[in-house]
Image 1 (cartoon, one colour):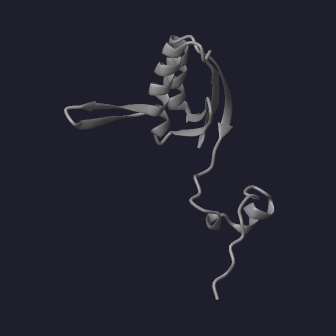
Image 2 (cartoon, one colour):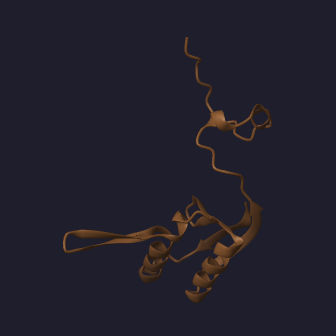
Length: 114
């Protein structure tokens, strides 16, 4: 998947901006009349991957929306072109070549069942 790694910096003293950014990225819930309404965040989309605090991987289409949001709210941000492979559910999905190259060298070996 081709796209961009985007990182941003927000002054934590600006509670209003931090709140808007958090709601945009992570979504939010509203409770009304004993019913809960869940609004999906930007990071939950299939073309977006949450990489860490203030860091997302986004496809080109998703980048346009994120870039617009950050510009509109005056949030300093940086984007770098990047590519990301598919999400692996477990280390067992990796082929031996990937393991030998150290791509997922943090995978623990599991003992074989007898």
